[in-house]
Length: 179
Ligand code: NI
Image (cartoon, rainbow, N blue to C red; front, side, top):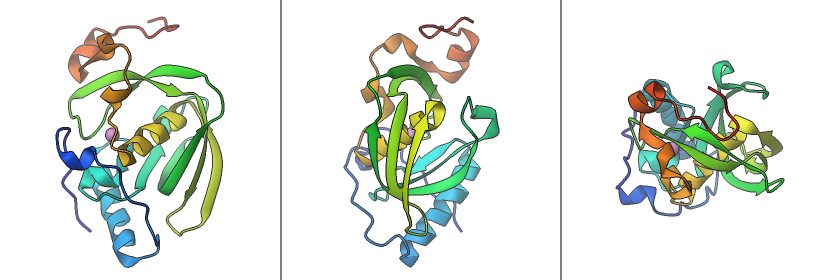
């Protein structure tokens, strides 16, 4: 297992649409997934997409740790391959996000509140499941990486963009939020 280098915003690999994975069970894909798990564990964070480790393939790993599970259940670390997302309503909400490719910064980004995800898992088995809230947010963020999109490209209010230390020290309430 290896800890992989993480591409930072400005590198073109983060802007290219990634290619579908033909065989999730191929040894190179399984090795990539294992190395991504190791890399995410080392870097900290809730998700990592293959383009972030210089592999332009449509796969990512994510989890929702108990500390981040809102109304949702916590979700153990798992692999998502060739995802397709369908919003289940027009409803969007602002929520804070960071990205390992944009270290030190965070922002409030609008995302669909409820989505359906169709994909393959790490064993190549089909997955068809609805997600809400933070889990839906993470899945949208990671799937965007496969389409060459980074979270600043989704923002509509740049007042909610700043360095971790400053935005945590001077919290700007989100719409509907009382601090
Ligand atoms: Ni990211």
